[in-house]
Image (cartoon, rainbow, N blue to C red):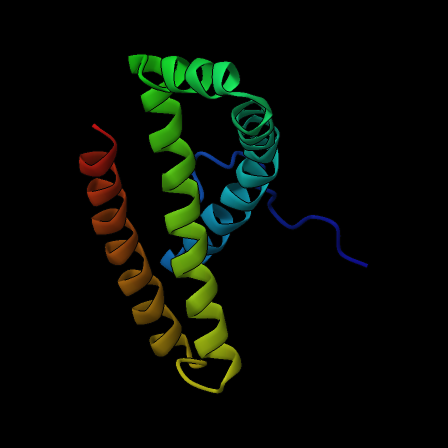
Length: 124
């Protein structure tokens, strides 16, 4: 067995293809959504508890930092949704080639950026 192959463990020097970047972002947004569910459940529970709880949630969500966090959560949802649709299309047998997957990833990223900008306009 030849163990003299060069090893590059510096991830900063590796150039990932667009399909890998899209896949990594999809996984990161999934983890982010899992974490964000705690905040969303807290806000929902407090807002349904009483009128004062609802007013408290409204007061919290009007703060600029809360708006930024809300925009971040919406950004996670937008990207994860669009990438999920891309995966469903690929599961149906379309864009399974290397070229097709590259184009599907590019389209998903562009649509996600557009959706994230629109979500930011909506929140602010």
